[in-house]
Image (cartoon, rainbow, N blue to C red; front, side, top):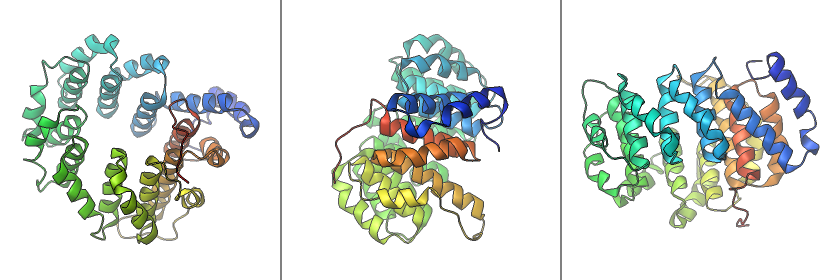
Length: 334
């Protein structure tokens, strides 16, 4: 099993998790936090480290900040990028000098993340780099990173330059620009996302629902209900259920619960059954976290303890924190 259930440290984890079903909220959240912390330095997968880091940054208290600061020295550019952005979003002024060192790094992605992080912490001296990299041709990934970061700065004026790349032939750049513009309040971007919900392409529908869901805008409530009822793809239905959960509507709860144990029956073109299974189960966990119903705690604990894929364990741990953690909103629509 490729998980944290390896070695002496994992044996301690197993003995602690065996009675999780009867444990109180405090014990369950402590186990979920332990899972996320375990994967922060996980050497076998940078993707797992990024996922754990972003989860800790969102749901952890200030005690997790030193762990995230350490990730600025990670071997993986993706982890360093995520760490810098997380520290900026948490306004961790203690890390400013370390982030400035990252800004001086030769890695373009480091410079972009550091510039964005410093901007969020009140230092705009390097913010001009973001516009430069948005139109860079020397590094094909630089525009993607810059478009992503610009959407996290809370500066609606950035929509003017993002609009120049939102029609790019590069689908990754186009998606990042569209998402960032929507986050910065662009009516045109949000209208495009709504239109994309009805083009019949599962990945585009799921992406649009993810972005619109994060906006937590009640004007999309009926649209989310419609997609939950009529979408052809299970992933689209789950994304709609998650978006509804973010609005306080739990109508997708049963679907998400049943999807935790989903197994794809066959490979599709360029999409192995194992990948389909992973995506559905991960999306089911995040949906349950968004809905916040405590009936999901036991099955999420089982996923956190037993899943073979570290990314599923992390998703389950984050969902548990969303349901039981102090930042969770208790009032829900029925």
